[in-house]
Length: 126
Image 1 (cartoon, rainbow, N blue to C red):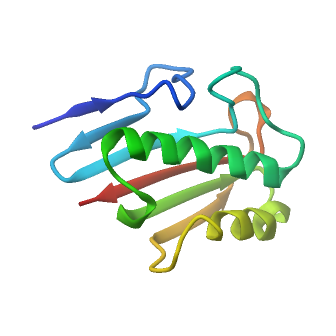
Image 2 (cartoon, helix red, strand yellow):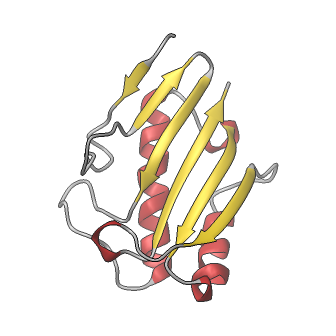
């Protein structure tokens, strides 16, 4: 199997034994991003909109490092600590796409790393 590890210092370093992304053939699998500012290492958690913007900026940095864009994303998974955040996260998420949205599921979970409210992972293909 052809496997390439993707890393950029423009997104947070992994906080566990995983890679920011792995490329295999034409597919890239992005690990879940949480709202850590890569320059400061601090969480951006003023509200769920701020969290979601930071998560999407981190995702954009990883995609760019691999030579992909949001137009290449085919699948997204959004994890929320409460479905009460769905509308806000959905609005922020949608603002990053120009149409032709990827397939997606959004699930509520009991908790996320570092007690954040949102985590998003993606799969992209060229």
